[in-house]
Length: 133
Image (tube, rainbow, N blue to C red; front, side, top):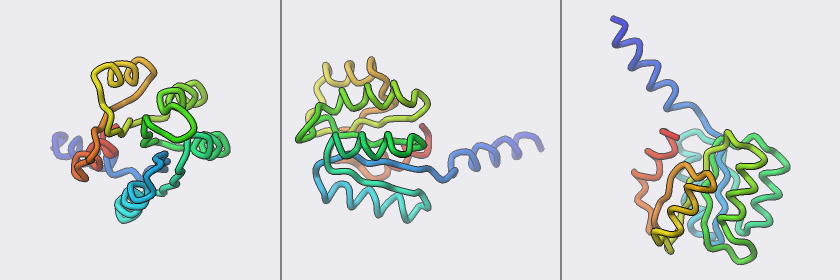
């Protein structure tokens, strides 16, 4: 009987509604991610630049999860990652990029990223990671 309870508890933890920030300069990517996560009951905020994303993050500081592009028009996404983790070490950050070199991956993990997704993003992989981080 306890095995059933443990599975139910895991399902409850994984389905917890999250507050998500998406920082990506591709507006269509932000729109798609917003729609997907809203349909799953999460609260989503989207920013199109590093500065705007950091401002929104600093204004709230209660995001559970951040999806962050490395290549942003105004700031380096890895620098944004570092600032987020210094401000809120418990916030999970998933890097999303079309420029995923091994060096960029390593640097992202050194700076505190929880996961790394290459574009084009597979929706099932993205939602699975969001549920599990």
